Image (tube, rainbow, N blue to C red; front, top):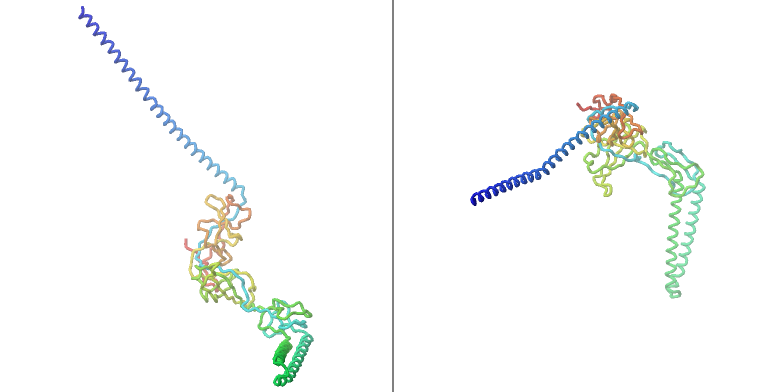
Amino acid sequence: MPRLWGVEGSEGENTRGAGTVLAMTTASGTTRRRSLLPVLLIGVIAIGGLLGWIGIKVSEKQKEETNRATERERIAAEASRAVPIEVTRVVAVQHEASVLITGTLEPVRAVDLGFELGGQISRVGGRLGDTVVAGQTLATLDRATVGAQSAQTSAAVAAAQAAVEMARDRLSRVEPLARSGAVAQADLIAARSGLAMAEAQLAQARAARRLTASATREHTLRAPFGGVLTRVPSGPGGVVGPGIPIFRIEDLSLLRLRGTIAEEQLAFARVGATVRLDPGDRRGTVRAVVRSLDPMTRRAPIEIEVDNADGGLVGNAFVRAYLMAGTLTTAFRIPATARNADGRVAVIGADGRVRWKHVTAEIGEGGNWLVTQGMTTSDRVVVRPTSDLREGDVPAIVMVDPPAATRAAATPAAGGGDAANAPVAP
């Protein structure tokens, strides 16, 4: 019996042990399931976020395509409502590089004339704008005025001569008395000084008389060289002062342009080089180049002479001149009407919108502009840009051919000698 009880006790213990193991196993499985749950939740969230991001990108792409389509429709609608404008393509040409020089066309010879002595004008021998020759009489002074001045100077000479005689007489009486001791030496010195002063005054009066005599002979004002009268007195009867200019003569047959150039442009400037004036096709010649820079402007002076025997140029006018550098570069021809006064050109971009460009240009053959900086061969230029044409506008475009002068083959102009008309082969 005790053994059986022991066996039964052993079986109960085994049963309780098996239950404990089963409970522990169940608890372990539950713990593992609970630890995997956050991982699964994180994975689900990550997948959901990825899908959401993809959805957002797809939506943005669709919205972008929709906006593009809307923009195309709007541009097309604007173009259909816009006033058509003429547009042409630029043409690349071979152009001789040049240096721009600005300045005033001054007469090489110009002079202001006046009388040495004052007086009243009795006659004027020319009118404003008249052409005079060397030696021509311009004006004369009233002889009565000159005669009065001559009489005045003669009287001054007579008075000075009398003063000299008096001083000599006094000295001749004082000297013997001074030798005998009858008068002090100071009286002798005073007498000698008085004579010297009187003689100096006599010399001054005689010089004034000679000057008046010269003025009497030269009371007529004559032109020193031929030219144009650019200033004249109003007429006879006026009173002029000595040395006051009343006439101006300018020789406009030869003009001089004084300007400056930058340091890097000195390599192109040489005495005897040809210069082309703008506007027109008048040519000039470099006469002087100063190879020294102004400390303030950092530019060098240059002087150009221009023949004006035919009178085609205006004296003292502000002009632009181009010093031909002798090297060929690529430039772009555009119509003369395409460039605004402020140096801007309106072009049509690839998107059909207006773009304003600042360009560097000069007048070429036929009046068209030669653009040296600021444009490319792909630009389409508005032929006649208006003030209401704004940046970003979408105009209706009408393509036109370039001007005939732009499309012409290379033909050197008379007296030109450059290759500014030569198109560049595409």
